[in-house]
Structures are given as structure tokens and as C-alpha cells.
Image (cartoon, rainbow over all chains, first blue to last red; front, side, top):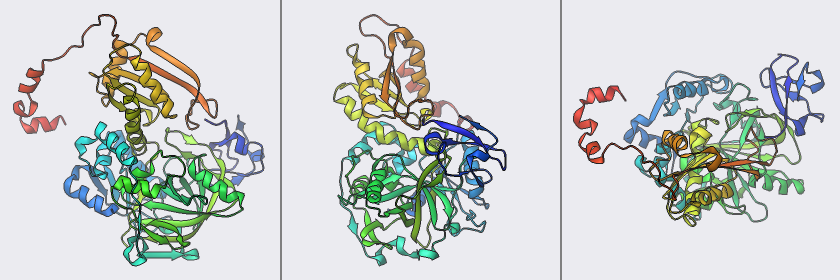
Length: 49
Length: 471
């Protein structure tokens, strides 16, 4: 399994996870699968890696 | 060669294999997968037709949904024209036989192609008119999870593979690919800064998809290979977008055409994958749709990924080729099975008539060497039915001493989707030799005499209503 990090959505507070190499250190906004809103990962209240 | 023909035959000849959900359901809000999960909790795996699904706009869809088609080996055997009774080793070996066949496709005119009965182009394409299914809680959206066709720009060979497509807009999909054949085709186009033509075959006869599971090397034309699976030519028709430069299956129910945009990436996922865990959100490709082709009475098809519908498909296409390779070295091999309890990929049960110690490990190493999905191999004697998992576990319980009969091999290529694997590429493999030793006496398995079994057939001794009650 590729390395992942869990992220908490700043809008709905639900958690999901992302591919570390693809997304942890680049400029793509993340997209919450629950509320479908996009946000920069810096806006997340909690990132677990 | 049509899905509807297959469903009609199933209704007629095997009515126990198919049920209809006649009430309206909302596939984009998990209703379809929730029904399948309810059935799974009852250990029931029928093909399910949802007669009145809603589309992505929440309105009644013109297309019913057929799903769970591949959830039993018996139905996969029937799809290939075999008998349900042939669903064990017979299915695996027949798949291996057909996989070696090549039957060139034939091209028909638009008028002869049912898939061209309804054609939408460019801005008239609207995925919201389809009953696209959202499968699991953390999925990023509704997904089309059937097979896509791409064409190698160098050889011209068509490649057909299951790829997940995330709904992103009326004409826009997010595409995930692993570094396999279609990925190579897209990379070639991207190196030339060209879009990659892609045809998403959303619905067709099940044999088309069973054929798409082949493990032929890159460059083999999958349309010819799928023709081998049907044992007759696959009928093709010129695509709506690229004409005779790219053919699509003429007898499909629904085919979307589009371009993988060169060097464009967006976030895609998470998506519930075959191991029963979510693949993470990633940066992936984008498809812009150019055309929709469908039968007037098209049926939308979906696979319940991460469940038996997906696991059975992963197993029997590999079992036959593994059996044939093992037989070349261990001629007494009796059966090879990749059980659904291990997602149809990670565990491999092999039965042999062992003549000398060491043959078990030979057989196991061939399985590990030929299929990187396989993690754990259990080799049993031929008195164990590898399709009855409780027998395999009994053999492990009674014929294995862990310090003598278990081998672990480290740093072997594994599966990136195995959630327990730390490394992106490599993992550990395990061989359990659950066969009896040849070189020392070993206790015999208890058996009720065969003649007693024969003269006490339950149908002869117990009234049908009572027998029916116990299932």
C-alpha cells in the first residue's frame, strides 16, 4: 500500500485519506468526499501522517 | 452476444439466479450497494436488476441497472456458455483454454450495430441521465467501474481493462489507472502532447468483461482475445468520434467515448477497491467525453467492487493458467483455487497427490512466481476439496506444524493495493504445506464408508418439504 495521510475536512469535520506522494507536499486542493467541498490542506484542523 | 439475451436466458433457465428490485432506488445515494449488502449479509448473491433507478439528476432513469452479475462462479460459467456444474476447476481450465485463442473481430455498419441506436455528441452528452452508482461511504462520488478500451498508437492493438471513472460533471470523468497497459498507452500519447482516445464500455455481455480480465502481455489485441473468449468474432463498429480509426463493440449496451486530456491532472478518489479498503485520494487523469452510444433499450451495468461480484472475477481467470503451469512441474496437481475469502487474489489453495516431499513447495513457488497478487499459498493433499474452505482450514489444523511446514519469503513483488504492505512494490509471501508427510506414517482421516453414503441419499430418506426446510 502506498503511504497515506489522514486529513480532517475543515467544513464538515469528517476524515478521509490521501496518497502521501501525490498530495502531501504539492499545491492541489483536497476534495472532501463527504461534503464535496475543496480546501487547501493547510486549512485542515488535523492531518495524521 | 447481448446482455439482454444473457439476462433473458437466465430468467428462463435459471430463475433462482436473478431477482428484480421493482421499487425506485437512488444509486448515487448508496441504495443499490445497500441492497447488495443486505443480500450479502444473508449470504445470498443473486444477479440483481434494479428496474426503476433514478439518474444523477434524481429523475427516473431510462436505463435499468444490472449488477452482481459476477458474484458466483456458477453465473460466470453460464455467461461463458458452460454448465453451472462446471463452475469449479472446469471453469478455470476453460478460461485458460479460451485465453490462448485469438479470433479476429469483424466490422459492421452503423445500421447493424445496436450500440448506435441512440447517439449523442459533444454537448448533448450528459452523464446525469445515467443511473451512476455511488458504492461506499468514503467514495469521492458516483463511479463508472466497468472496462475501458484504449489503442496503442504504435502497434494499433486495442487494450481493454477495468478502470474506475469518477463522475465530475456532465461530460467530465476522473480516471484512475495503475501502471499497466492502458497507463503505457496514455504515457505514449502524453509524450506527444496528444489526447488519448478512450471508449468506456459501460455495459455489454458478461463474456466481454470476463475476457477483459486476461493477463496477456502488452501488445496483444484484446478485441481478438475477447473474440476467443466468445469463440466467435467480436462485432465492432466505427466509433462516433474517430470513425474507422477507433472501433467500439457493436453489440454493447452503452459505450462512452472521450479523450484522456494530455498532461492534465486533478484530485480523484478515495474509492473502495478490491481488497475491501479504500484507495486514497490521488492526483489522476481527466477524461472529457465526446460521444455517448447506446441501445434504445440499454441496460446500465455496474460491479460491486470489494465484494464477491469483484472477487470471483479476480479468481478463476488466474486459476486455470496457474494450474497449467504447476502441472508442468508437479503432474499430480488436482486443483487450484483463489478463494473469495481472500478477495479472490491474495490466497491460493493447491491440491496435489504428493509423491515425494518437496513437491508441495515446488507447486507453491510456481504460484507465487506467476501471480504477484498471491501472498499466501496453502498446499493440501487431494483428499481436500480446495473449493470447500473449511476443509482447507481443517488440513492446516491437523497436518501443519508451524516450525516445520511454514516458509516465509521476504522482498517479493506484491500488490500496491494490499493494505498490509509497507513497501510500494515488495511484500512477504508465505507457504503453508498442509500435506501429509510421505516419509513417515501419518494418521488417517475419518470417513463414513462410501457404500453407506450411497444407500442413504437424503432425497430417498427425507420428505422433500422437510429437506427444503433445511436449505
